[in-house]
Amino acid sequence: MAFRQQNRNSIAKRLCAAVAGALALTTLFSGCSVAPAAATPAPTPSEAPVIMEATATPTATPEPTPTPTPEPKNRSQTSGRVIPEGTASKIFIMSIDNAAGAKPQTSLMEADIVYEFLVEQAITRFQAVFNDTYPLYAGPLRSTRYYIIDMAQEWDCMYLHEGYVLLKKPYRRVPKDLISLYLPGGGFKGFNTTFYRKVSTYDDFETKNGYKFRAPETGRGDVHALYYRVAALVNAYYGDYESKICQRFQFLEDVSYETGTPFTNVTLSFDNKKNPDWIQFAYDAATNRLYRSESGEPSMTRTLTDNGDSYLTEQMNVQNLIVQYVDYGSVKGDPKHRRTCEMIGSGKCDYFINGQHVTGTWSRPTAEDYTSYLLDDGSLVTLEPGNTWIAVHPADSPVTID
Image (cartoon, rainbow, N blue to C red; front, side, top):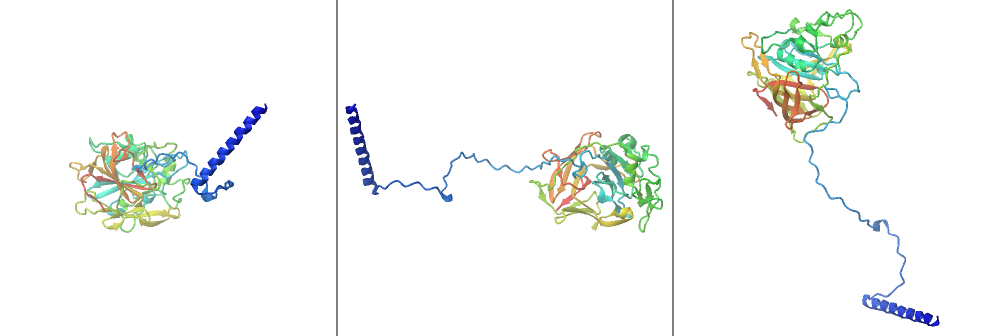
């Protein structure tokens, strides 16, 4: 045991000598004296230890999608405004006069959509689509055409006009067989009884009264002065019926297109050879609206106030403009120079939304289908929520975009 202890002591002494020698060599070569090891100070914030973590591989920034993707909200199919779940779509379309003696028209600003059709040589006619709100009255009411019947058919709606000529094939359309709630011939007894303001107010739906009235005024004869109480007609005759929901376009607030080009004016000739600058829409960036003019004069419209007893006159303006190009022709031998128009099939479109112009197509394969408004890539066009003007324009007539 003594030997083993002495041996251990001897080994320990030799190890200590070796360590001392190594320290001496370190001091010699480093040129620094050996000092007792100091306690390592805690790192200051600027000297915080760096923790290495795996770095994700950088990915390329995705390109903006040219077609905007709308949010899933419950929206009106005619305006894109957000509406409560379960809100019924009860569409009412009215044929409104646009002859010289019919201006200014009443309640166009309350329409969610206005179609403009060429009906004679240099006369267009409006089809006002009401759904989100119904004006107390609108007009002046005027006749329809077979291709306007084609348009009304796709909306599964209540339709009102004054006058219609039933043509021979292939232009023969029987409205009461094609339109869900056809007022002139749909069995709605009393729809054309006269309204008397002395009996009740325009917004009184309880008092027994009529629906139509004439309001001639200076420069406006009887033929351009027929009006109907729209809200009262819907209240009396729509009942539980609901229009089918069809997605003709999409809607999204502040919509923008990567491929869109800016514009300030759209000029529509509507085949007017004498006045190729006949109809214009001017874009105002301050209000983000398109303002309509005709023959160089602002297109004025009346918006009802004071429960229908008064009105404000303003320039017609819209949120979106669609130019739908179609093939127009003429009914052979017709003394009124009535037009033909192909609303079934497909064609090109120009869209004007939020100061941007984009292009696309429209498609309606059969009369039983509804019209889809598409971009060039085949997706549905996305509009800004609000009112829309659809100019059904001759495909072979010039349109100028500035």
